Amino acid sequence: MNIRVITAIAAAALATSAYAADPVGVVSTPGISFGEYTGSMPVGVGQVETDELFYIDEQTGPLGKSWYIFFDPQGGKTVNATITFDAPITGVFSTKTDLDASNATYGATGITYGTSRYIGLESPTDWFAYTPGSNQMTIHFTALDPGDDIRVFTSPVPEPGTYALMAAGLAAFGALKLRRSRKG
Image (cartoon, rainbow, N blue to C red):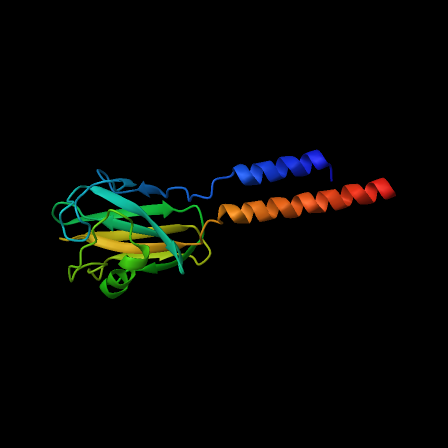
């Protein structure tokens, strides 16, 4: 392997961002969009009340990278969507107990999470589906006040130190190969 190729690979690895890319949502329900929540109203208490399926970029913890997905329309509405993440889905919390218990570990800074008894998926017709190891999920939420909420976990994005270690290993391998080729 050429030392220039190794150097180029190492530089590309070091230049790669360690931040997770935002999820992409395709909403099949007319009049409802998908986007990042940047508001100041608390979530999970029925105060956002807009026809948008939102995500919140949350913390990374023991279960992986966390994304809070919620739908809090004004009045009762149904949304169908497919959401694609940049890493495989490793789990989902959809109950009040799990969501409340995980807010301190995974909740985003600056976001107030409500503790209504209806947090999570409260309707028997609400559902989500994904294949283990896949980065895509389908949702069907019929939201009443205060809305529907889930927390999706994805495989964490490697830290920059991981890329540096990989680059150092590639450089060492290249130097060893170069040394052997000069001897032979």
